[in-house]
Amino acid sequence: FEEKLKQLAKWLDDHHRLPWEKSHQPEEKRLGAWVLTAQKSFGRGSLPQEQRDALEALEHWNWGDYERDEDAAESAEPAAKAEPAETEAPGEEEDETQQTKRWQQNVIQKLQRDLEQCGADVELQRQKLQRWRLSYHPDKNYGRTEEVTPIFHFVQEKWSTLRDRDVAESAAPSEAAPAPARRMR
Image 1 (cartoon, one colour):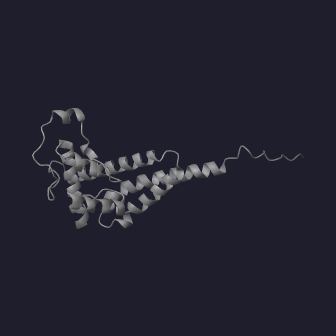
Image 2: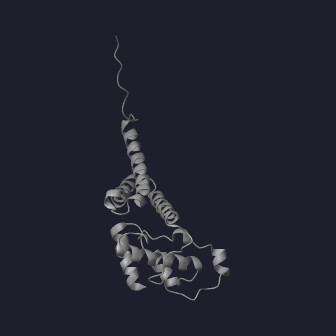
Image 3: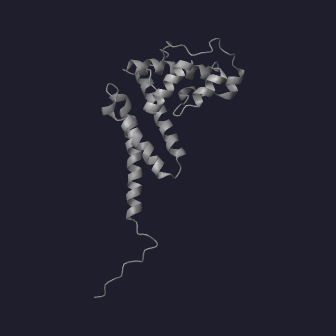
């Protein structure tokens, strides 16, 4: 667990997002499968507390669709497997398109939460959006263009909204400045 946690921490520092188990990149695919297994273990209530705490301490970490319902978790019996397996693959009940859409929605929701945490700090919002524009740009994600394009469009929309708000604020007359004098004819 510790070795995978270190690999995941490095991945998150470099990419600012969770790895995807459907990636064409072997490293991302392996790490993404491990992340999915950890998320599923958490959802079942079988992830040890110290592992849960270690994962939650990572910036950009989220539980995806496997957030636990605490009432259901209390009544569930603990599963035998305590540590995520390295090779467990995602369930076959969902087709690839459904999984891709679910992943896109999860990423967009996470980015939205990150923006909301910035509050009124426009500079921090601008920094995050700029970083995401680079991370999710289709040209920077060879082999994943179709997967990242909706996320990139979301980021671009937020960037445009921020830019438009800046333009509107700079175009609005300052309350402190006196009104221009009118010419008499």
